[in-house]
Image (cartoon, rainbow, N blue to C red; front, side, top):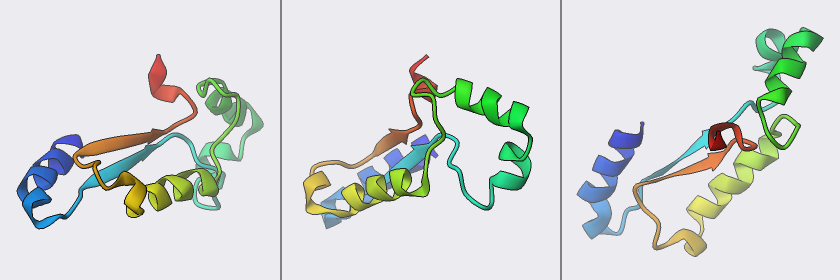
Length: 90
């Protein structure tokens, strides 16, 4: 995903088209609940991997998408936005 984003950003920057992507940690949704979060022990292991001690909520990723779609990120292209509770900080 990283290389595709960078390649797309380079190709379309001259057309004022930005290419970025969001890289989320575990987000608590109806889709993730049955596998990832149904078992309390598995849930706690997943939470422990995130340094902020919680699972992400859909709003966490949505606010990142809103930022990337806004003029506030107009000078940003070819980037990944980590919304992962510190998962990749290690």
